[in-house]
Length: 193
Image (cartoon, rainbow, N blue to C red; front, side, top):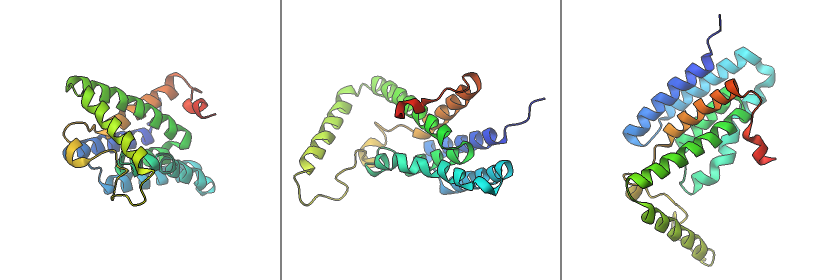
């Protein structure tokens, strides 16, 4: 008889709750993140002991380090990065990176579907073009307006162009887990070598 994968169940329930909250309020509550981090720490210590606690810390820290530039320009929300950190706390940095890659792939697919469905291709290209122009012009400016570097504007994009990235994270996590089951040893880390 196979044992129950408590880590998988914890993350699935946490991600489902996060997706629900994200669809309700476009936010992922910190209490969900705190619960996930506590559960990941308890399960990590139960499985590995205190001796390799640095590995747990690397799993939760790496998503912050990797995705902070995207948070800085408001392309990814803080709650989304924290969800990746929880996944990294449960499964480690390498699995976390795979989840990040697969989540961005899922988000790209969702975005293309959304753009096609809402017939917003020209608007999205114009938004990107204006943002690139803003970055180019800003190099020469000594004083910049506050938040000039933000790509996402919650006042205008929330209803039209935003996707709920937590749903992509859920799909990316399940896809990464399926890869470990059906393609053991496969890793997207070769992209960074």
